[in-house]
Image 1 (cartoon, rainbow, N blue to C red):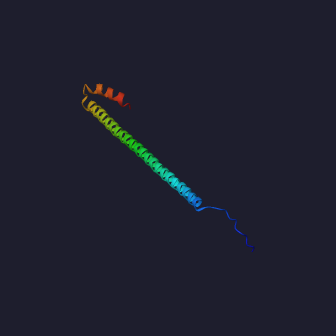
Image 2 (cartoon, helix red, strand yellow):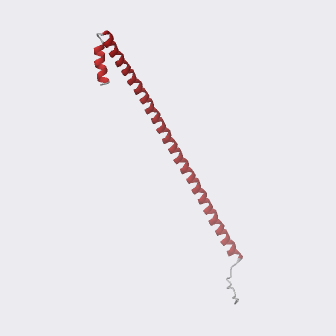
Image 3 (cartoon, rainbow, N blue to C red):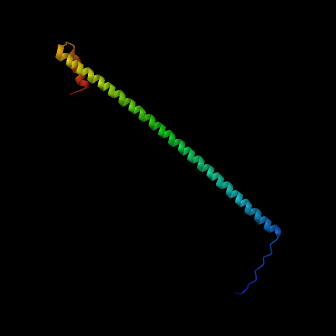
Length: 112
């Protein structure tokens, strides 16, 4: 293999030190930017997570409200149905004078 002479460039110690300082400053700036980026990502994830948790809590509250309304509606229905059946039985057994009025109303609420 042939040996080639290295080309020499006149570089002073001062130029080398300045170049190293510039390189270190660029690395420091890059590291600062990376830390800021990570911090912003973390904050964004936290905010996104909080929004998700808040929406989930609101949806859960709405679900519980809907379930409570359903239970109340079922209770109302069952109460009216019991009243209708009781009045019908009373009319059939005793011929109560007020039973037809109440039965007519219960038929409007609960048609057959």
